[in-house]
Length: 275
Image 1 (cartoon, helix red, strand yellow):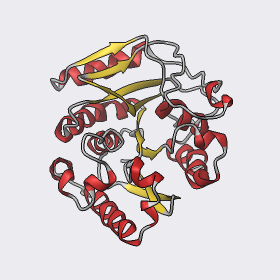
Image 2: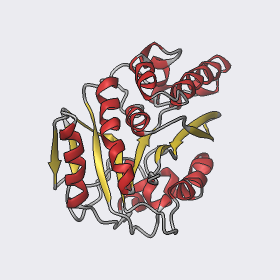
Image 3: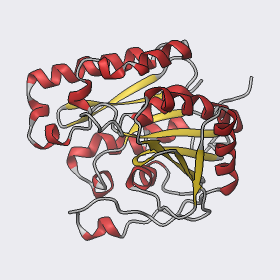
Image 4: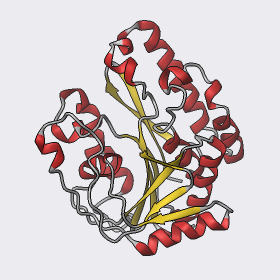
């Protein structure tokens, strides 16, 4: 049986804070440094030859693929110390793998475009600096869609799944458990009723990602906006941090595995598929 590269939906934290040593990000930072490299089998003969990274911080009308051999960093945040704007991550891109991505999408009737100019946003370089500081694995950045269509994102994942047999890993970089800035900055996350709602929300996600049949899993994700707390965790028009998980759910095989990191008193879940 052909070995499949893994699929991982990670919680990437807030802006550059995981790199800057913010105590509130300690658990997320530790997982990015330790858990994710083990899942990717970094430092072994089985480490991926490339990574396709779907980032919450790049929304477009059609799927867009970074295709440059070298990328500048796009510091898409504000109000942080000066060091946050001098961070470097020198992993290569890959025009060859970008073309593979375009090809598998086209085969499934998914329109896409290649972009040689856009820099890597913090959804790419912040977690990858922690995951793979050697920066020796090519990365191909992939956008999410402005439409926020769950079926479209699941279809993207199904198309990308074929790359796994070529030892190309899929990473979804977002914050699937919660991305509601008002709730985060007003202390709402500490209210018992909100915490309970977040737990119910996470239970719905776990049920979907652990649905073995990929077609049935896709149907569950199509209805994610009806899950308890969906609009509390991801306000209307703000699903971009959940969409990378839907892509990963499409790319994954059987049931997902999961782990949680504490953040603002809540469990921030990451999900991964090794089969």
